[in-house]
Length: 121
Image (cartoon, rainbow, N blue to C red):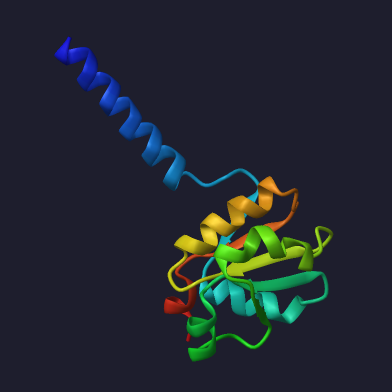
C-alpha cells in the first residue's frame, strides 16, 4: 500500500513540474537581446508589462503597457487578438503565466520575454 501511495505522490509531483516548466505550444520565448530587435518592427505588435503598478513606475520600457497579472482577466479586452502580444515581467515567471492565460483567451501570437526586466539593460 505504501509503494502505491509513493508512486501516486511521485506522479503528481512530475505532472506538476511538467505543467509548470514545459513551454505551452504556440508561445514564443525570446531573451532581452531579441526583444530589442522586436522594436525595429513594431507594426503588428503590442507590448504588455504584467508587473504591479509600483514595479512598473519604478522602471519600465517605454512601449510597454502596464496590465498587472492580477488584472489580466478583466483587462484582456484592451489588447487586440489580431496583433502579436509581447509580455514581460521582472523575471519571466509572471509573464509566462500571463502568456498561458492569453493563449487560453484566444490570442494567437504570444511571446514571453525570458529573464524579464532583470535581463533588460
